[in-house]
Image 1 (tube, helix red, strand yellow):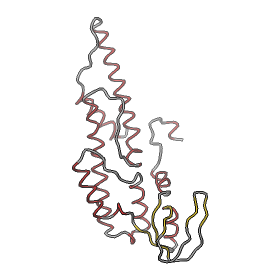
Image 2: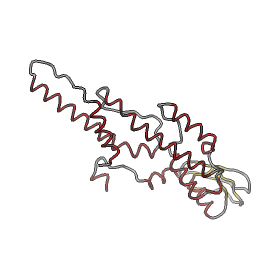
Image 3: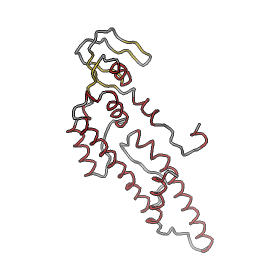
Length: 218
């Protein structure tokens, strides 16, 4: 396995994240009459024509592929809601709350239920803009590393995709920062044995290195 040979490899592929997202509940409107379906994960139904019901996303997609239902886009996928999120993302340093699998859910709906999503092109554009703003925040958020010794970094409200992409690189960057800081303190101690080692201000140069390390993928 890649994760075993490369300790900093991303632990989940895009397909695996999508698989996990398929357990999220979503509302459908069936066009058939059917008794409840019994699965290990739970019982869903009964299904009655034109009566909305909640099912896992994987089941909604399966029924949609067979023309047995329409899928109602989640409330957060409306143009108004997404526009508000985008504005808040741009105006605040904090990450705005979104479903943990918002990227995977939207991708699945774009692929299999595009006709069920009002203003789909605007919705798609807004989600892409939100992703871009949030990734910019992830990069600029590392500026705290340039101001003080930092061995952990908390980024609240990251989505599954965002956390999955940046976690291995941030981990490696912080480890590198720790090693560089430790090496420098040892060298300072060797040169000035009678004085306590003092860290020098390597913030801007180190930050450039960290950002390069994170976004280069090397």
